[in-house]
Image 1 (cartoon, helix red, strand yellow):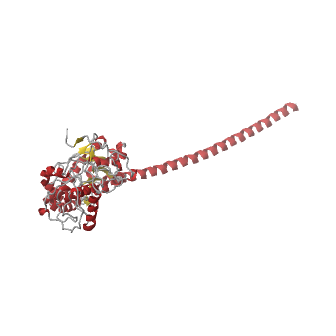
Image 2 (image 1 turned 30 degrees about the vertical axis):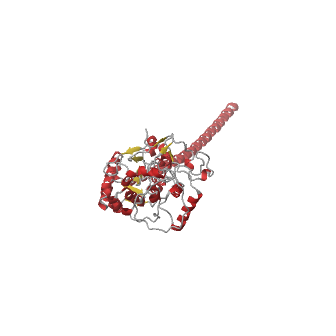
Length: 459
């Protein structure tokens, strides 16, 4: 009888133990779930906080972006850089002086404004125009070709242009044939520009820094360049042609004659009204030079020169009193098979003639290139020595000295009166290696084939 009770008691005890074990497992499982829930809740809260934080940051960033976009849209601007030595204003405007300058600025503003209407938000853009020119050179050029009215009114025109628009500047880049380029761009060889003065120095110029500076400015929406007359600007524009976004922000103002290297660039060309800039190039010659071609050949063969006696300096003659001499220039322009200019051989010069020339320069001062090599000087205030005019071998020696300075246009020069050098004078005979190599000022012309093929203007 006892055995069944004991067995039953044992079964109850086992049941209790199982129940306690189950409850312990249940409590442990609950505790584990509670811990996991706590961790999950914490992670969830972290995610909520993180999302809210990033949402706040996103909202702030969007607000700032919107403000920035509105600000740049309102304060955006177009920059127009123009080489004033290559883009000359119409003479009818220049003759009006300050009034013409204001009118030119107004016409230029209207043309630019009309062009940028195709761009979104352009209605808010400000227009900044900077024109760089060698004013002294332009004055000499106008005087040289007989544009007396333009010469007198040019400075007033420049002042009127600058004063008429608050963001327009006509800057005198200084004397020298490449000074305007120096303000806009970098070292190049000018292709089309007629020399403004044979006594002007050629400037060395760095990179197109202004363009890069403004293109990196988010408020600069577009850049318009008046430089397409000069192939020397092309290398400075090369870094921007492969990026379609940047290229779309650059346009070129079409000149009288577009440099052939610009045709391969992806930039848009802009044509302004013909009432702003000249549509024809300035004449190269003075009016009185029409009959000089025949007399120019009279001195092709140099004659012997006597030993020079002491010269007495004479003041420069006034322009109206000048008498035409027998100039070295103008002469034919010889070209090789590559259409590169070849300087005409002037003959040899004896040591005595060169010594006479040097003695005169030491006694009297620097001689005037215009008077002695071109036949007359149109500058009544010319500081250089005129009379007596050079003759024979001394004149040839002086011409050869002038050729020691490299022409800024190089072998592409087509200016009949250019007295500067278009080939390296150190390559003797022509075509041989230059002893100065890369240090030579004519190093860019060392490759020129010296063999004459034809004259400029021949078919």
